[in-house]
Image (cartoon, helix red, strand yellow):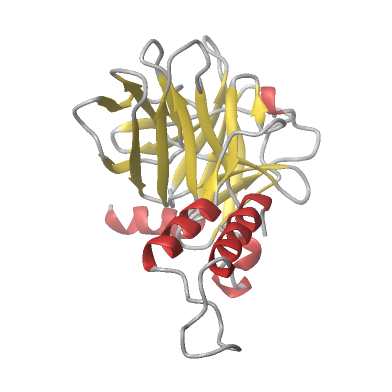
Length: 280
């Protein structure tokens, strides 16, 4: 249990013990907390605040927990950004006070990362409201506080548990039938060591010698051309891996501008070629 939750629960217990006992004699337990007291204690235990050691540069990083309340400190003179997980998309944004707070969604931070940004700015100091972000993966509960001065949260982001690990997928549900080949340039060091899917997600695994700075963006090839797709970069048991929240028949890893190196990834290549011949 986190320290903040322990402190909040301890305060509730002390408050309850200070209440008078029931009038029908000694030995009776102290009066139970009221619903409002229970609510305040629960919110206090769930509230996460900035702490030393929880920053990367000016980016405040929380560990995501469902139901937790994440505080963000803002200023009317600055814009605070909330950064979601790569590939995560927002379906709904709601704020308790929409007249004195600007809460808007911005374009993705970069093509490769594909990260959604939410911009938060109060009109004045001394305000407090809550912001609910509902995405295709989870719900974020944010409490925004405005204050004067130059101290403010420049950016807020999260780390996430690997609840979508392929290790949790039954072996008979994993498809390993992928073909990987270099179709332009020499075979690069970042050519995938293994590609597989579980029917919903695709994983592209690289060798341990691949540095993150050398990893190429992923494109999905369809009849309409090549489309850049979103993915997450995770650290796998034997090296880095991409996690793609979709299934694709043909993908390409491309690195370079004028003469890019291209590595093609084909799912079920034999079955796909047979289907193509059958349509001719």
